[in-house]
Image 1 (cartoon, rainbow, N blue to C red):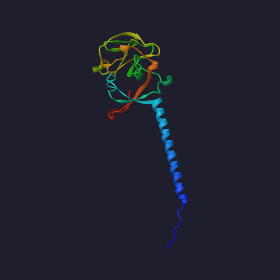
Image 2: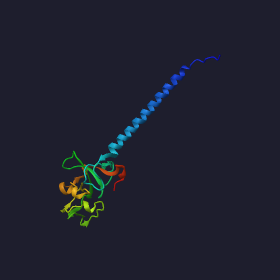
Image 3: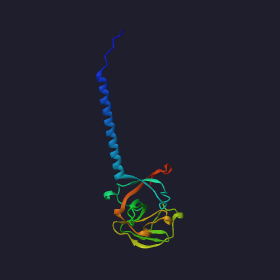
Length: 190
C-alpha cells in the first residue's frame, strides 16, 4: 500500500495571500477607474438630456448628448459663431439652455423678417430649414464685450436672445459635441 504524504500546511497559506493580493489589485483598479470617471464627468464631458424643440432639427426633445465642459473652461477655447453652447439662463440661473451662437462680442446683429444679418452681411444658416424660420424682425443691436447673442435653430419655437437679451460669458459652461442616444442619431454635432 502506498504511503500517504502528509498535507502541506503552507499550501493553504499561499492561496490566501494570492487571493488577498488579487482583491487589493482589483480594488485599486476600480478606485482609479472611478477617479478617472469623476474627473472626466466633472471637468471634461457631461451627459445632458435635451428638453424642448428649440434646437430642431439638429437636436430633438429627449435626445441625449455629451457636452464638452473643458473647451470653454479657463477661457481655453474660443466661443465661435455657430457653436451650440450650454449655459445658465441669465434670467434664472437655476435653469440651463442650449442655443446656437449667432453674435460674438462687438458684432452688430439685426433680424429683418426672419433673416439674420451680422455687421450688415446676411448670415447663411443652412442649419435652419425654411419651415422652422419665422418672420420676426429685430432692430440692430451691438453685442457687448464678454456677451453672446444666441438663437435656437427652430426659430418659431425658440425662446432666445431676441426675447431676453445676451448671454454673459461667465454663464456659458459647455459646448454640445456628440449625440449618444438614440443610436440612429449617434455622432458628432456640427
